[in-house]
Amino acid sequence: MSAEIWVFAEQRRGALAPVALELLTEGRVLAEKSGYTLCAVLLSAGDDDIPQELFRYGAEKVYRLADPALAEFNNDLYAPALWNLIEKEMPEIVLYGATAVGRTLAPTVAVMGYAGLTADCTELDFDTEKNILLQTRPAFGGNIMATITCENHRPQMATVRANVFKKEPLENPAGDEVVEVPVDTGGHGDRMKRVESVQEVAEDVDLNAAQFIVSGGRGVGKPENFKIIHELAEELEGAVGASRATVDAGWISHHHQVGQTGKTVCPVVYIACGISGAIQHLAGMQSSDVIIAINKDPNAPIFDVADFGLVGDLHEIVPEFTRQIREIKGRSGN
Amino acid sequence: MNIVVCIKQVPDTDKVTIDRETNRLNRAGVPSIINPFDENALEMAVGLKEKYGGKVTVLTMGPPQAESALRDALAVGADEAVLLTDKKFAGADTWATSYTLSGAIRKFEAFDLLLFGKQAVDGDTAQVGPGVARYLDLPMVTYAREIEADDGTFRVKQVTEDGYDVWDVPAPAACTVVKEANTPRMPSLKLKMRAKKADIPVWSADDLEADSEKMGLKGSPTKVVKIFRPPVKMNKEKLEGEPSEMATKLIHRLKERKLL
Ligand SMILES: Cc1cc2nc3c(=O)[nH]c(=O)nc-3n(C[C@H](O)[C@H](O)[C@H](O)COP(=O)(O)OP(=O)(O)OC[C@H]3O[C@@H](n4cnc5c(N)ncnc54)[C@H](O)[C@@H]3O)c2cc1C
Ligand SMILES: Cc1cc2nc3c(=O)[nH]c(=O)nc-3n(C[C@H](O)[C@H](O)[C@H](O)COP(=O)(O)OP(=O)(O)OC[C@H]3O[C@@H](n4cnc5c(N)ncnc54)[C@H](O)[C@@H]3O)c2cc1C
Image (cartoon, each protein chain N blue to C red):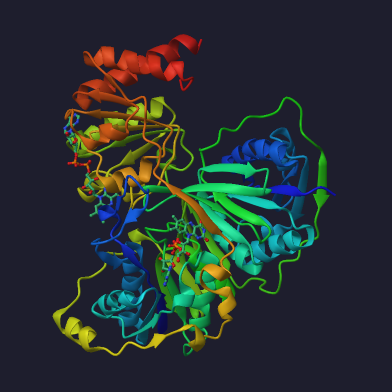
């Protein structure tokens, strides 16, 4: 039996979280380097085709824990069910998305065993001499990066940020073996009861999942002007972010706030419009792949972290940018 | 209702600089504050106490000077405080921190609710809350925005990625609290005076119901092996011209990178 790398295949309402596929794609690289077998572990009601999707992204084997009680995340049930399986199979590595669920489940599981857990990684590598996972993450609000290892305890576990790895399907599925695991959720039954589950956030605020984020700052000028920010985001199929100054001014809801006291985001492209680039704002977005800054002040600190800087009036540049994108899309769309 | 709040003293991250030669954090002269999210947890606790009666106890593990964070907490309405300090605690990762905190909480008198901040702004892991809850075998609702109590049950509104969930959990329960939950109050003069004089017990490793082999650096499964500054962007580019030219150039660059 060869050693294994597991990816926790988080699902909500029967749909797989995209980060699980990103982790499988990156997991293929780690499996190649380590010689370990890449597997996924799925907790769900069991009435879904998710395993097929996991095979397509590189899982050679899927452990499935199917039970109506596991349809939606409940830490009291998920953590013991997962830990019992981990204890039995003892994989070398377990990776989770750094989502609300992953960041609750993983530390619980880590304590059930004596496992190290690195939080919110943005880089993974495998040291083939020591046979350990190298886990790199930002800390101190993104001011520093730390590489963390776990030499003497197993499994080595990490939560990994969404959108840092690209997801790429294989031409042919990597496997087809579904291991049906008997579910043992321990003794807590219905200690935690979910009374209600409400989806209230509009699509343009799903800052964690968005590939593109268009953010507005005080330079937007007034609440009505956020319209041009929304329009650009919509054209890019992205989400709308905001600086705290605009949230405090009541121009936009706090769900949109990016930064130290708002959300930490890591989209492929972050477009800061009329944002000066205070350290607390940078803390929430500076690990984005590509940063674009639009600001009329050429000395604004946001330009220090921007791959592309556009000095000028956002009220002219943003609508023009939206118009041109619409134009190319119109051309390629038919 | 008895409530325990875990708070962490953190360097004011705005003021931390990095030594360009050694890549170490310059902490000298950097003011220490209560972790901002823990102020929300504390406000939640004090608000619940005002509504339902009872008391609030704050707990921190840290160097001796972390005592000042506890006094700040007393000044906004906490009733009692305990400081855990010992060389044996130093260098703890979240596993060992959770273990140590739970060893102290086990010694507390019975409580109804255990609160944490959403995460600490320095370590940034958000792992300690769920870890402690697991050690104490408490139900944990992370990212709590509202907490109401009704006859031994807490109704907790939890922020999720796309909205919110509502949970019913029996006391004793644990939650981590988000910033949107409330606006922390300012200290009152009267409480400030009292806080100054308050007697704060200090516990060391030997005072806890826990194995000191599992504390601090020695007990930690993870090790930080390297710290470095995030790579600076090398290819920064200013796009110039009229708005329409700038937009065209930008689209071109994004297409080159296959982003459009
Ligand atoms: C403890 C703490 C936590 C904080 N947390 C956060 C946080 O989570 N997130 C956050 O964002 N902030 C946070 N802040 C606040 C932060 O310090 C800044 O005050 C805030 O980010 C500023 O927002 P801004 O960039 O929108 O506004 P400003 O700093 O006022 O910048 C506006 C910018 O718009 C530009 N501009 C104006 N008009 C135009 C135009 N027509 N076209 C183009 N550009 C224009 C200006 O040149 C300027 O650079 C926090 C502060 C503290 C103390
Ligand atoms: C650069 C760097 C990276 C690190 N990365 C990791 C990592 O990936 N994994 C890991 O296991 N450890 C890591 N650590 C160690 C970690 O920072 C410490 O274990 C720390 O004591 C607790 O973690 P945190 O600051 O992330 O707190 P969090 O888990 O984010 O804190 C959540 C809440 O727990 C409570 N709390 C936290 N610490 C205390 C305390 N000392 N006293 C009382 N209450 C407290 C507070 O209510 C706080 O709001 C890292 C340390 C450094 C310097």
